[in-house]
Image (tube, rainbow, N blue to C red; front, side):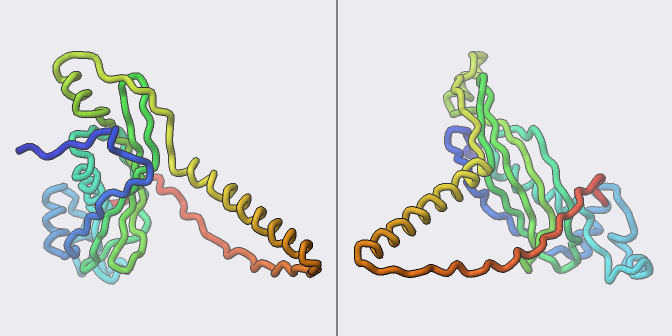
Length: 223
């Protein structure tokens, strides 16, 4: 029986992809990956060489982790077509590390019979440290009926779907929270006036926000 396919009509912004936890990386896997990819950079397979250039041991090629994230997408987007896939390498993966791949639907839109979802992707190690970030765009049939129509040579089902995204949803949330907070404070003040109570509220001084560092975008994927 063929695997159940994924259709655009069933996807919502904020949906999380089932996490994919890979077995701990070991040196045998690194050797096999070198043979399969043709990438025999000694820092990935030669322990003595890796230590001679200042590394504590060999480490996994970034493309290996990128492939793991790609598996997460292909396992989830059954029947979909990948239109874009990019990643940013953040932290090295060492032998013994467990890579956990995760993703979330961040955007969906459709027009003219073509339907797309945008996926935010990231990979973590067993300590919860971020190893890689990325994104992907997947094109899907709107529904099973839409797929059957197109495969039989008919025109696609056309549903105009305005762009929905996590960024717009998150931007609206603070405004609502502020409004609710203001209404609550006004209500408290009104109660105090009715009861003939006067009080002076002291607003606590906020601590300065912690500085955050911005990681530079990788110009070229390192092997």
